[in-house]
Length: 109
Length: 87
Image (tube, rainbow over the protein chains, first blue to last red):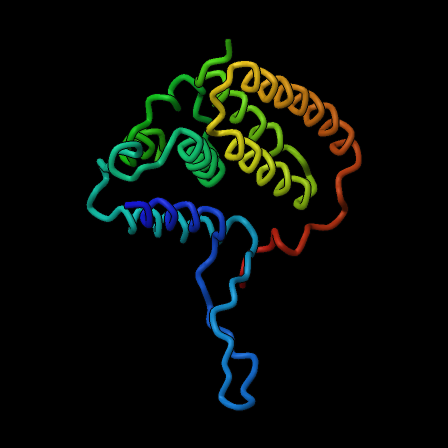
């Protein structure tokens, strides 16, 4: 469970798919998987879909009980989603968000 | 006595205020720093320490809001490369 939490947060922060890069070919030494952070917009979409993919069919996975995300993580997630979809989620309502479907209901898409 | 919802709304206000910076570097820094700061003090239980940390956060919020106005007066002329979409 703890690794789910850390991987969700890691995706939120790194924001980019990992691309393998081969640097040193001398003596069969390869350095692979350098992480590049790129700009905002393109990466976020993939991040969001990855987050959702991580949670998979558990759209109703409770942030606190199932995914062990505490309220600070929730704030971070809500902020990332606000930025991604350019919506403003008011403070009172943000306290009530407990799973992915709640967040999705804010979108006018 | 500062309660949890106040702390969370302070965090949110700091993150929101930091988003207004035109400069990519400072924007990312404020986001990183607020989350790190809040995470570091996450486990404080002593009420006086909590008050102290909350007051520090509030003063930083004032700083951010003041400095944003200065930066908005002189926006950068070119987009930072980190903000460009991957082709």
